[in-house]
Image 1: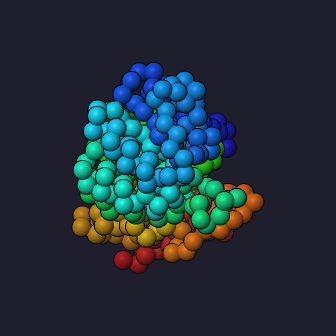
Image 2: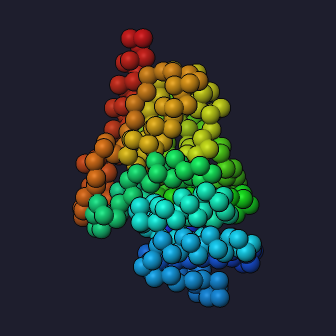
Length: 318
């Protein structure tokens, strides 16, 4: 894991939009006065006639995006995740999800990856909000390669989708041959003792945790879940059946996010000892850097290891 290339995920999103824009003239990008932080200014530079600066008016931006969709365009309204699901919740829900329009809502600065802006700008329960909306799908890529693959893939899928982008560099865990498929989870490592189920930037931390566990002769399956909704019931059930012990890891509250989604599935298909690693029912805060926040709130490979050993004890006693 230490030698993997690190790429900024916001840059990856901006560059993917440019590539997509060259291939599909139906794509339009809407911005809420955050074009540089979200890197949508890349698209604006190449396609100024298809870039629309809406100002600090996220609710209006979502309504305009819905209008574009009714005219056959594929809009990508992009803002900070916290504003996409809180400030514009009504418009996303009623104008986009309820009408099942082909809008790709993009939320950047997800989870605790924005340390200097603090709790007001940290989207820690956006997955919970978005996945509760009927018709809305939720995609959380792990690295720069998957972001590009996902941007292209969701354009081919009709209907509303929420794409969650982190504000940080992340190790590249996929190669160019990787194929993103909406609704499919990916087994990145096989092991029979415990399953580490990650999404977004927590998946590389699951891979690191698996390496640490192997030092203690514990073999972990690592399952990456890039689509939190619709979630891959088949693969989740399969890894739970195989390992009979599951840990989830997410850059999000443990309430309503990946951990909740996995619990819902396994509660119906294959109950087993399980533990959730994530933000534990609290707001974030400001910090000098992201890793300080991840350390304080327990979003580390070491915490995943502790959780794995905890579920293994419960598995053994069961």
